[in-house]
Image 1 (tube, rainbow, N blue to C red):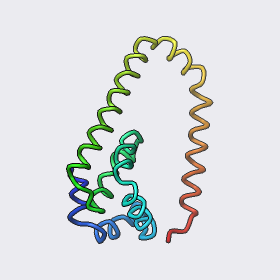
Image 2 (tube, rainbow, N blue to C red; image 1 turned 120 degrees about the vertical axis):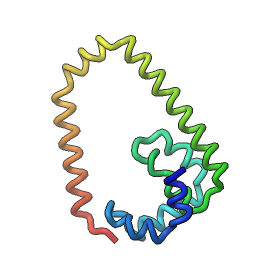
Image 3 (cartoon, rainbow, N blue to C red; image 1 turned 45 degrees about the vertical axis):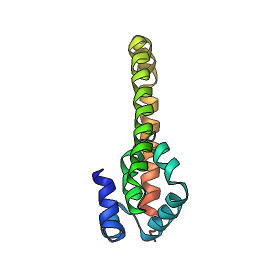
Length: 132
């Protein structure tokens, strides 16, 4: 609710002023506003299933002045479903911990190197892309 309130009460000027710190340009803000205005309800619901986006979705919801009750309902449903899924996966993982540990031990080094290479490429591309 704090993030929603920041978007709602401080709005565009704050996002544009402080968004530059995280390379968030006015063009990206306009695209976000248009997209969110058209698909806000489903965006709030589905964003609760995506890491990072789940924590940031409240800003644009407040920014476009989404009805707070609607925001809370869609957020609560998304969060509840996500948490139930995580608990279920945790139970399954606990029941199969030995098999999971053996599999991870086998593939840990190649997966880790692959993830670092992909992350490096993405960071390099993002830093090379001119903002506008």
